[in-house]
Image 1 (cartoon, rainbow, N blue to C red):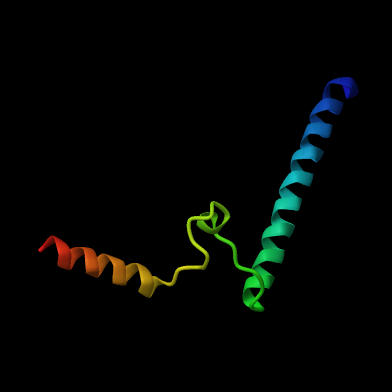
Image 2: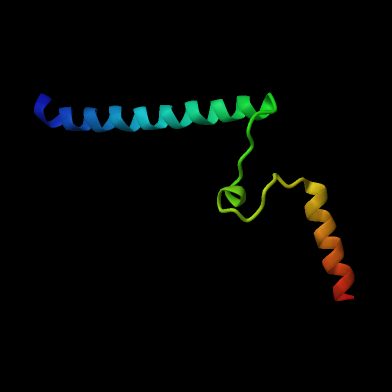
Length: 70
């Protein structure tokens, strides 16, 4: 019985370890964001933009496109 459960236990521990690492990283990023640390978005990582966009930026683009369309 113990021989059958050992591999499951190892896989479970590995999965928990992976999840804990992800949570710790997410927590660290949240603390950096709250304290004015480094902000990185997927678009910044892909070199599509050099800053974090604000909601006002997106609304301004949508308003501009709407004006052009009409």
